[in-house]
Length: 403
Image (cartoon, rainbow, N blue to C red; front, side):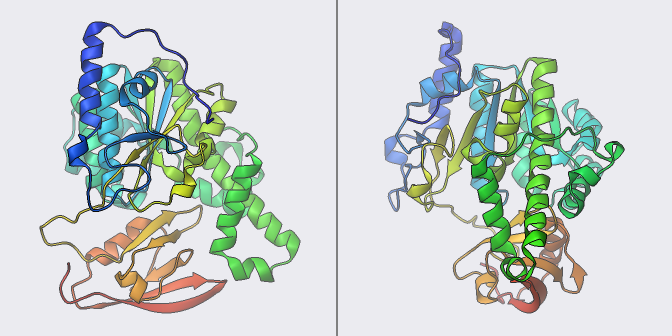
């Protein structure tokens, strides 16, 4: 049986039960609304536990509303993941108004901007400019602005969980011990990762740099893997510390908005939270219709929510490369590649590191997004990538009509 990290809760007063019922209706679709074209491991609009067994939303939400921390994972470039996060946040807010929202997207130094945002002192445009969103995070701000607007509407504290990317990159290059105390942004030494997490990160590194790992001496390869794992641990620790601090100083439930890789399997941030004294955080994930059932191993999350097949909007679309971008300790990495996409035709593959686009260096997702947004239909985009330890050129050919 999967572990149940939530503490038992007392009965809910009648007025809160009414809100609970409303939240349950809000978060679950009626049976007749299910996607009849395809039903994956978890039916659209339904909740299941980490093993795929259906769960009733009311008891689940009652437990979540009393948990100290609820972590909502995402794949950063999927709009439905962010819609689900907003709906889940709204359901929790209906049951327990004492919430704070933690966001991976922004580093600690931008907390004053977030405070001014929540206080209603700036417009969306001013917020995006003062956070330098396109450079600092890069993924479409329209995915996150509804969550930020919800927090401001209800005057919920929003907490910047991250650190500057340079700290993670330096750790990946040189190791945590080489970072002076004054440059650590207040982050403490991470708890040692579990063997499961270490293995997963080692496999990730190997997939990204297969030939380099094969050609490098064993001690050098091991050292690179150690630094990569250490950098991920620092990243996880930084976010866990801000979550724990917010919980301790405010007493609020902290709802974390962060990437799935930081929470899946209760590794990463939940593991660091446990080391900080919060062992009963809850991990929730959206489950896409085409996602494999074998991942529902009882450990991946405390609960998952089924999503239907994504539908494109009717209005004209901007050019799309058709890849999932994964920010890493250094640069960006190609995750999934869409079937029949521009990226697939260009022979981009999962694990490729994108170095240069149209002659411009690519260091963050925002760099590539900016280049693609300037791309006109029917034009070609030269890319320099690193694959299997060697640099190579590929050309992404955008169709004359964007569909």
